[in-house]
Length: 407
Image (tube, rainbow, N blue to C red; front, side, top):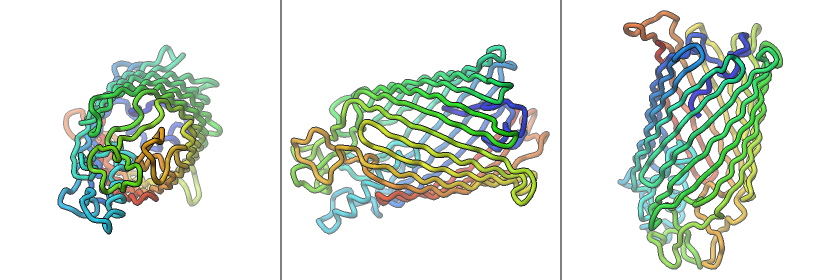
C-alpha cells in the first residue's frame, strides 16, 4: 500500500538494506513522477503514469498522495492479437493464444485486461487510481498508517481502506507489523447484465529483525477472505464441444464463467537482506525473498526473488533482479466443459503456469543541495527495463522512467 516509510529506524547501516536508496532520498518530503510502458507480444500496450507526493506535517505525522493512470491501447489493425475469433479452423489456435496473452495484461501490468465484446483484443480501457494516506508516530510507542485507495475503469471499481500498526521492540532492532484492509469492489463486465459486488478482507502480520548491523531478516503471513462475484465478467466459456474461436457472444454453448462464491488464501513470506562492506562486493546489497501460497481452490504457488544493488560510484546505483513464479491449477479447471458442470473457467490465471521476470534498473543520485528551483531539490532520476515471460504464451517488455524531487 503506497510507500512504506520508516520500516526500520535502527539508526545503522541496517536501515539502508531493505530499500538500498541514497541518504538524500530518505527525506520525508518528496514528490515522484513515474512513467511505465508494458509492451506485450500480441501488440497490446499499457501506458502508465504515476504521481506521488509525501509531506511531513510535523515530526510525528506525514501525509501521502498518489495518482495512477493506466491507458490500455491494443492494436486493432491486426498482428498476433488481431484475429478476435474471426478466422477459420487453421487460425483457432492462434486466436486462443492471443486471447490468453491479452488476458494476462492484468497479471503483468496491474491494469485490467481490455477485451472486446467479441472476446478479442480490440477494446481499449483507462484505469484511474487514487491513494490518500496518513501516518503518525504515537510518542515512539506505536506507529500507525491509514490509507484509502480508490480505482475505477470501465468494468471494475474498487474502494480499499487499509490500517497498519507498527511496533519497535528491543532498541528498535525488532519491528512487528499488523495490517488489515478491505476491498469493496463492483464488477460490471462485458458479458454481465448488471453489476455484482465482491468483498475481500485482508489480514497481515510481519516481523522484521536486525540480525547484525549489516543483515536484516523478515517473515510475514497474510490471509485473504473473499466473498461475492469472483469472476471479471469479461470472458466466455465454450461448452458441449464448441470451440473457443466461435464464442463471440453469449449463447447456450458459450456461457459466462462460474466460480465458487468464496475464496480463502494464505501466503507465507520469508526474506533476508545483507549489505556488503569491503572487498569485491563493497557498497552492494543483496535481498532474497521466498513466498509460498495456497488457497481453497487448490492453487499452490512458489515465488523466488533475488535483487542485487551496487553503487557504481557516488552518483550511480545499479539494481539487477530476477523473479521465478510457478503455480498449480484450480480444482475446477478443465480442457473442456459440459453445460452441466458446476464451475467453468477460461481464465489463464487459474491454470498451471510458470513465469520469469528479469530486470535491470539504473538510478542517478543527485548530490545534496542541488536545487531545481526555489527550495525544490533534485533527488534521483532512474530508468528500468524488465522482461517478463509466461508459459501460457505471454511475454512483455516493461520500461520505466522516473524522477524524484525533494523539498
